[in-house]
Image (cartoon, rainbow, N blue to C red; front, side, top):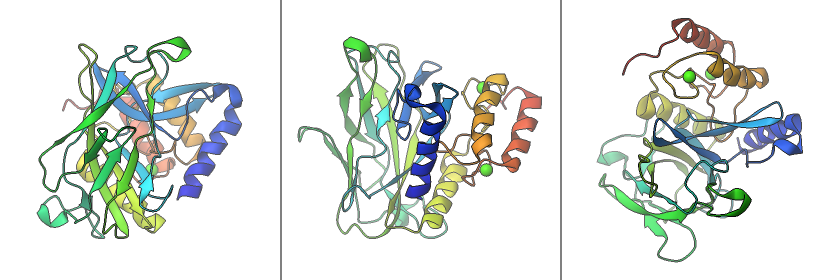
Length: 279
Ligand SMILES: [Ca+2]
Ligand SMILES: [Ca+2]
């Protein structure tokens, strides 16, 4: 899977040329939508890189070092947030482990493992809880000056603690900001692979997408409540190369991690309806 993800990223770079590589395309994108922080991915459109703020389920793997990764990072375009503000996170629930069919929501799904999130000084350390009481995380700075003012770009480290058994883990997070008037993000989820089979990893991520996120209007790729030409522009780029914008797959509307004719049919139906369901 990692090789597929990387190959897609590299393909995107090749298509766009070096000038479009303003963002690290395999990071989780952060932006602002409807007055709140939103998560998503970056997508190459011609010579531009756009932020697609619809995905809320992301892939990651403990493959940078044993039991450790700091990829994907979290990144915004320049000028998105108030310069010098801070963005923090909360861990919303205990970790869950894939049982082959689901991430059980009850206590039976909570493994002995915990995930530690850390960046920089030891004070910047958080541990996933052993129950579903939220844990307040730490905050990190938005660039305050220079050509990158208002950009957030950080790569906190994620460590799977002992016994660190092989398998697939689900972590539920949210972002918040010190910026006045900017609301916290909706929950988002990272599906971590610890030496898991790639197909099983994607199956687990599909399950999470369908069952813990369950998007009401997946074809609304820019999260504005409408399915219109802007969404079509995003959809058709992904459809043209079949695969996904790592680390998620916004134009995969049926949750199988490929963007193909099945998704196209879902898209045109939603496009004809124009308005998203009122949820
Ligand atoms: Ca839209
Ligand atoms: Ca699909």
